[in-house]
Length: 164
Image 1 (cartoon, rainbow, N blue to C red):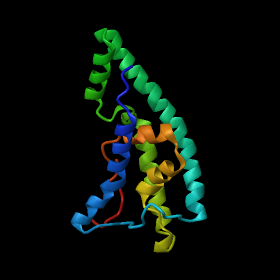
Image 2 (image 1 turned 90 degrees about the horizontal axis):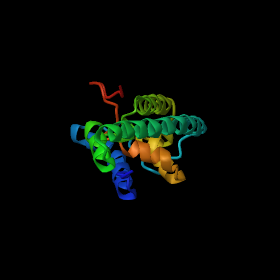
Image 3 (image 1 turned 135 degrees about the vertical axis):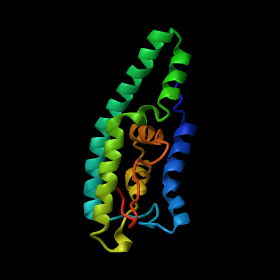
Image 4 (image 1 turned 120 degrees about the vertical axis):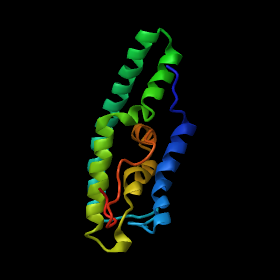
């Protein structure tokens, strides 16, 4: 199968997602300015270990779902390369479009934010670093690959600057 998740595309996706929250500075909001080296607290690390386990299961399911998506198109089109292109065209987030990926990202983003509200500012970890930066530091390849497919973080801010 034509694999569009090349190392370069994954790296681009990681960079896009890690820098995306910096766009919030334009509207005067930066909820958690902690950089990549934020070590967080013991509770952050425990939550991260839980997240890694959940994301492993969801990433595996997402890649299985994606393979089935591409295979269904291959059977219909009788052309492997065209099937892959059509799958990506219809689902631009690829395996990241799997509903479980979105749910895990939202659940743990909000959990990290809630934990950040309970600790001093210098101990906070920005959610994008918690979800992806810490994975990059530990080389969790499949987990990084599935997240790098997301065109943006599936999260937003309300008028008071709270993640929703």
